[in-house]
Amino acid sequence: MDSLCSPSRLVLVTFFLLCFFAGDSSATRPGFIYTRHRGRCTPQYWSSQREAWPRMVPERSTVEKIFGVMVAKERWRSDLTLVESTARNDEEGNAYGALLKQGIAALVNSYARRSFSYAPWEVKTMLIQAMVSESAARRQAEKFAVANVACD
Image (cartoon, rainbow, N blue to C red; front, side, top):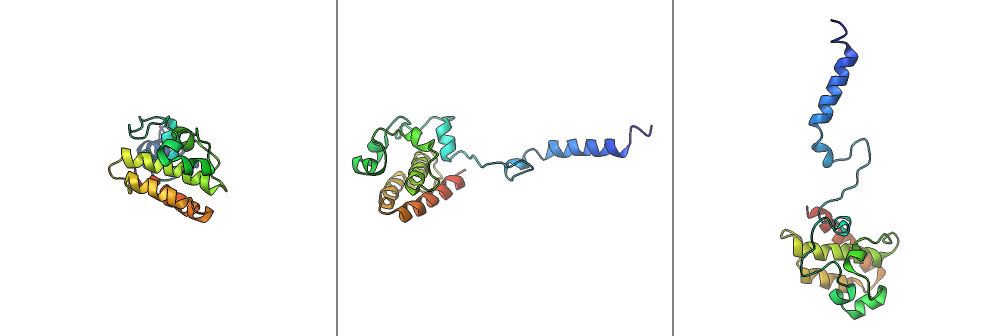
């Protein structure tokens, strides 16, 4: 009878119950293992193609077609697609790369999410205006990133 109610067995049962009931809350805050926020509005989400892109911005469309020839040729390849832009990993130390990645995600969100912070024309205008300097590009990329994470 003592083995059924031993302290180690009670601790083990309590641990399993806590894990079972705390499963939903772990998605909102990091647990024992580092968790990265991958909301439904981030560039990582859109590059994974888990959801269909809006018709106004097809994933295979090019940066040149969406933002214009001058903007695209100034910093990026003319044949760079939108889905390739969201999957880029060169934003560390590259303000223009971060601007493009977060800007494309913001543009897709502006069409796909009614509650998104910006309208499509605002995203396009802000991205083009941020091309003036590296510091402006960095600041605008951060603003887009905040809006993309807050969009969920």
